[in-house]
Length: 405
Image: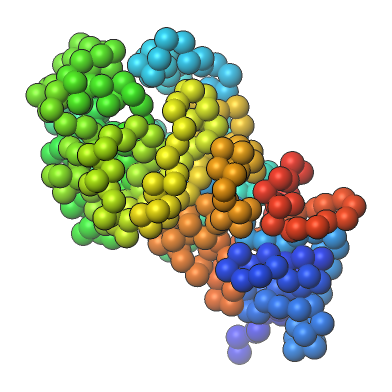
């Protein structure tokens, strides 16, 4: 006869379900890693009298944070790169370090990055993978991982074909669990329209996550729209076919040619023209936008147009990007910076960008990013000292390492 696992009742000074109001003196009941009930401590203590109670004390209990975009491969690059003379120079410096590394160094960096994110309460990660051969060497992690295999064909069609084969191999071998695989054509400047089309078809056929970097830099916009600039010259020197440049923006190149599947995660979206906005204005139900505030500041970019995406129904999430353009892997810091540049948004709206919104983007709505019956019990507790006036504000402004439950 199969034994029934005892339920655990977690009591906290405040419970923050995210999809419901804050509950003072609240509780969450968990069984077998799933949430069974959320509500008042006294009500749940009565209804689940046989549950084992764990009083967490004066903490805010909330869903684990979700990092919608990072590059764990680059964790070893902390404080090694400076902006220098622009985005292209930064890319060249990154590649120089990247291709000089031994596999053991990259593997150690990925593990270190996962641990740092976990330390700061991140329980789910959408990670871009440049070294897929190392994935099977990663130790088991308590986090949920979406490994998005990066593909490009800057050095010819064979490079793209091999990347797609690798992605398909991982997808075919994956088992149900905390690790999921997806596909990520790197960016319009490094992945051809043919590779985007093949990646989109692969994502649609296999129903896997698709993401890409898009409209990231002024140099990318200059390359496509004007057919010149530092990035144009650099990629032309590598042998890239530049015939798609000089008459359209990267957004127009992908959207007008139907090269993005529904549900695609579009990373950055910093540099948009008026025509780009006209194209995107009616597509809020089609794509998810991921913004990386500290990386945005690192490159000293023009203000991110979050209001445009909000006004047109886009689901906006936050990510840390990599330590090649950031100094830490901490979503609390990302929230704090974004709250400063977007003061019109409430703390709840900012918190949605690391909980509810990325959960939906990852296809995990009602499973992650909120505390409701039927969701995974991926929870963190944020200790606080002294009196607290607003639990939502306290979370956004938090500078204390949370406790992962």
